[in-house]
Length: 314
Image (cartoon, rainbow, N blue to C red):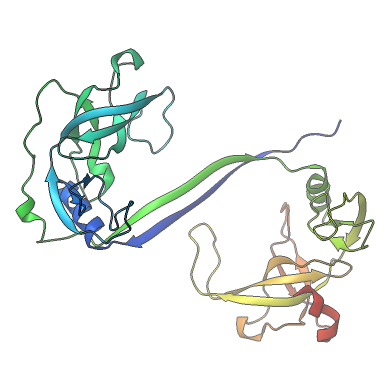
């Protein structure tokens, strides 16, 4: 049986967004140890606040302060905290209806174990030492025996320096395992060959192969070596430098139809000024020692391909 290939992969990017007046007030309040909700026309107080009533869709903006204490409405125990979660020891995810609110806020509860948590349990906010205007300004909730507590902070200070935007890191960690078709493709690249698969019905050759024809939906098994030369079908000029790529901008990233393939793959174009790259440019791969795929593609010096040759691959 062939070796099952697998590799850890991470997809990560910072998600930057601006805030409207309601969310701005809520996060600014957390920075000042103030919890704000928003009151609907029928008198309900929603925490966290939203800009539109989820029942009537009416715009709402009447902000009200609620207490830092509340009651657990439901919960789930987290035995194994993951990277980036509020606590690095086992904790409970809880929905807490803060005193003065009609909806529940999701956050973490610091508790010694699941036997110490129950629905109806009274809790209070534990504030983070350093607060910046984010949901993480609430470090977590902690058990609390007592009546509703007065607000912690001063809402009068909220207008001085409002939070107008946030950056939320988005990250996905997973293990990727290619199937039979992509394993053969990767094995081919290790010997500097590009291997696709031909559809038994439409006879098109797809690179990289997926094990099935995207047009006909039938399995593919016939392996076909394509390239190594190809044609630029379309391209873009990259002007923003990526953190994990040691490539000076501007540079060109292109779709390249390798000779014999019926699907264009993508690659970087080098060996030519970025403003001289064009559709129809004939290119070939450039490998570096020990690389598992081409570092970039460079012009071959051949005449440009006629548009009719690659127009179906755009």
